[in-house]
Length: 380
Ligand code: NGS
Image 1 (cartoon, rainbow, N blue to C red):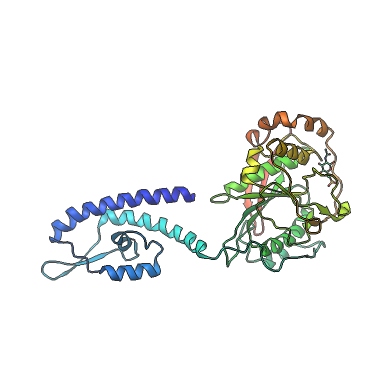
Image 2 (spheres, helix red, strand yellow; image 1 turned 90 degrees about the vertical axis):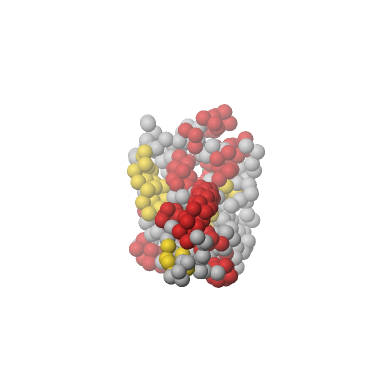
């Protein structure tokens, strides 16, 4: 349940409870005993509640009912002690208690200190590019939750980031990628999830459409949603942990300096490889185009979209935005890419998230990643 909705329901329930309590107070207890005579003193409740309950700012009689022992003991006129549990009120309290206990988790999370803006001990890292088994990698990272989700245990992360990885036929890279990325991201003290988005059909690879799918499906997996998205080729491994996978103020091109490209930027407007955008930036440009089948151009298309919406690309220093590329065969270039690029600014609203269609085969949670499998057939 979303945070806003839960808070709204909580308020509504509280209102009902106040009304009911007033009714019970006026008609129930008074008729039954003559005078309400709760045995628990106000000061006891206040001390206990303030120490142990997160709802200490609620009215006292609600605190009392909310506390696990909501049965009220009272002394009757003849001195006998009665234990009376208001029936309807208790039923409502039960559901309210459930809601509050969900909220408690958040309160606890929020009561941790906020993680440092720049986490400690960042710097150059090495990459293990040798073939490895996924089973072996899985055993190395027990702190990662099923689905490839992680949040720092001792501080509240400043950024909630979905890592979206378009994928097909690169199983040899998957274990290497996960083995590198998990410790790299954990060190940055961000809350993250890794989504491997695989094209199931045999049409030409459509990297951009897979990233759109990853965006949509990852949001469904995160209560409250991810704040930003890092679109990440599986063959690129960052080599410096100062290259922060955080939410950028302007869209950020992360993989500026790649070993295979002799650590130089091929051209100013390049936005391929690894790039970061916030939820707002990505939705404002209507996501990626869905029309690029085969290699090349989809990242340049995104560059045009960003320009049209008055964003500009940012980058870290070339000595920090360093990546190593894993070996693989070259993919076939898309012959239509230059023609498509000429049309971008005219087609932005009609091509992207707003027109995204795909058949979802499954969304499966593996230990170190969430696997999104989809058919995106070119002819459909
Ligand atoms: C450009 C491509 C981009 C690609 C970039 C870098 O030519 O999609 O090369 O490729 N644009 C077009 O083809 C229109 S790289 O050297 O990393 O393989 O990202």
